Amino acid sequence: MGIEALGGATRGVAPSLPSLPTGSVAPAGLVEQPASSGDVTNAFGAALARGLQSVEGLEATADSKAVQAATGDLTDVHDYVIAANQAKLATELTVAVRNKAVEAFSEIMRLQA
Amino acid sequence: MTIFQAIGVAGTGATVHRKWLDAISDNIANINTAKPTSEAAYQEKRVQVEAVDYGAGTSGVRVAGVTAASSPEGRMVYEPDNALADAEGYVRYPDVDLGSQMSQMIMAQRGYQANLAVVDRARETYLAALRIGSGG
Image (cartoon, rainbow over all chains, first blue to last red; front, side, top):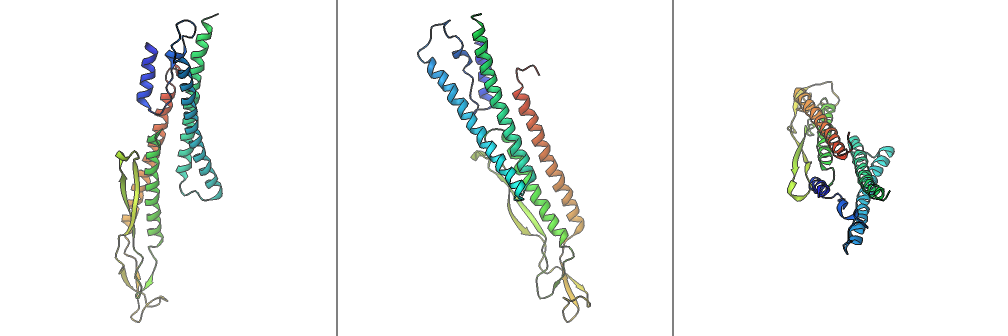
């Protein structure tokens, strides 16, 4: 399936990304459900939760650097800006993953219309 | 630091160059610090840098230590009217070469800027990856 190729590329680029189980979630009702389809959906949820946790970690780092900047304890200006940028990128990554999943879901819902 | 690692690694480079700049600033600030001949002169600070082993999962660079790059004897200068002068009228000045400090300052500044350029470029690269498939 072509979509799986996209997922494979994603895994190759960033091993820690939660991969989209695009192929398995989609065919609900149209194709015979494999017994493990519920597990796959849960796996996506768990992966997204893990991704959110790592975003939270980066946000916490950026926050503590911001506090250090405010209190005058920050030794490196670039440390804060880099941490803030990393947190921003991680957030955008999570949003991109969510958007793609929702997009796939809506596409399937449109099949019935 | 597993995700967006290029940014973090360039950050360690920027930190090392900032510390180098600190050492140079200290050296230039103390270039006219006179000491009595009974004491050691101010010694030029030089930052020793080492690479962080990439195989261990982390990478980048860090400061291994700061060493004294000039002699504690310094330069003996005849200044009989200096309050610190000894019986013969001599004081110790640090043996720091201002020309060398200035050229090191250029290297530290450019190194810092180069690392920040890497941060910027890596950010753009990751953003391009996030835009895959969105037609942008």
